[in-house]
Amino acid sequence: MPSLRELPLRMPEPPPPQDSAVRWDRVGLDRYEVKASGTTVGFIDVVGAVFVVLRGARYDRAVEVLQTLDFATAVQSICPAVTEPQASAGPSRT
Image (tube, rainbow, N blue to C red; front, side, top):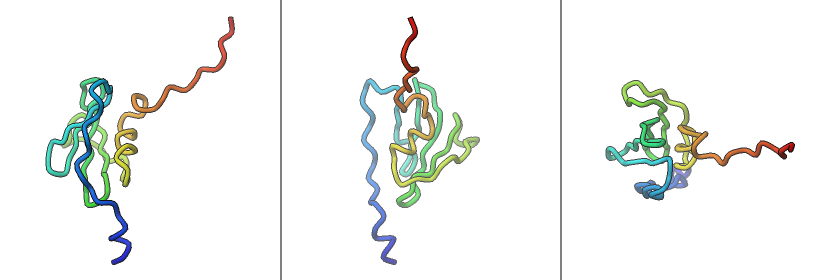
């Protein structure tokens, strides 16, 4: 099937920067555990070319929230408040 050949190849994701508040560790052949500030917040399963995102501290109780082809999007969907830049509150009134 030609469309299957167009899917990206999956290699293990490199670790995040040491000073990152969001970290992921490969905990299986096809699974990542995602932590925010040292606390487990979710998991990412690699199913073929798709990242299946599960939110929750325990894998057996985590809930699927997204399927995506982009690892950064997968991480951001688990902990958006930590990975998105803070929105400006607007001009200050002094």
